[in-house]
Length: 384
Length: 81
Ligand code: SF4
Image (cartoon, rainbow over all chains, first blue to last red; front, side):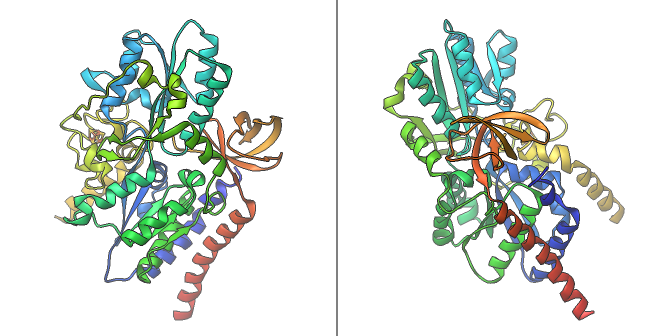
């Protein structure tokens, strides 16, 4: 496919790997966080870490929308389906995230909840039009890429007078999550998560542009390179980050110029700000309560706000004790640090959210990285 | 679910909808987030919406940069050999 295959070329990848190896300084280490789950997926799938020198380490960030959704939010969706009897529509991966009482949306469906996976929010609108005697709720999750489509859908419902449609809004904001990571004790005081720079999100940045990251470069002196989702994009971004670190620069650079501009998509931004406003605080899995990190539906569109319509009250619920997703989302732990990784917890039977979506750190490592652990174990065993 | 793909616009249905070609599969996408999309443009498709246009010139420039990075190291290695 055009604009995909060229960015996966193995020969060019080797060239970039050599360039990175030649430019890293022997006397230092480079710790870069890829914020976005799409990058986590690409890095695992194409074996990028194998192409990097040992001194360059990639840390997974909290940018997988399914992973950061806390149990309490999924409980609300399950309640709507089972107690209020609504048709609950959501993006596919969401239905498999473990919730309270051993339930997930999928299990709630087995108990009779009318839960439907949709590819696009427009499908949920259609379900509402086709079922005028039922209430339809769209469980809206995701970062800045899925928010504009939800905004468009609410406006369409409003202009059509589609009274049986509403949205359980759980849209979250990338820059607030990056700030939270940078302000965390592990990064600031304890130094347990060394961070020398960020790979900035690809598609989120097509919407918000490259400008919002300038704050991180200036205020926290961390280089940011926005990168596309193909393996060569990631390699090129790592090379650009290594150069910034070597030269003592902390700037926002854009590797993904074919799709990202400084201002982003203004039309999408305007639609979002017409329909949504900031929430005072929102709970994230792993990060806890993060101030001004999510959106809610404006008063003007209140009839389409499921939280108001069904008087939902959010109740935080602690994660499964064995699950390390929280620490993994903060960059403090790796999937293999979790005792139940790959034995009790697998993509077929996820115990935590990071094992659900292919962008989750645990699922990506389970699918693409496990053989490496085995090789390493064998090597270590041979060495002793 | 963040995965999104570049696709070529092959037909405009109305102001807000287009048909794109996704590796041989035709799919309709909403253009509600963009202005002035034309047949032949490449757009990045995500959850049924075109998020942005893809700039072919910038894509070429990036590919050239990547190729060049590899070549430079090659030249350096040859020089020192
Ligand atoms: S392996 Fe499963 S239980 Fe362990 S941290 Fe990952 S998702 Fe959570």
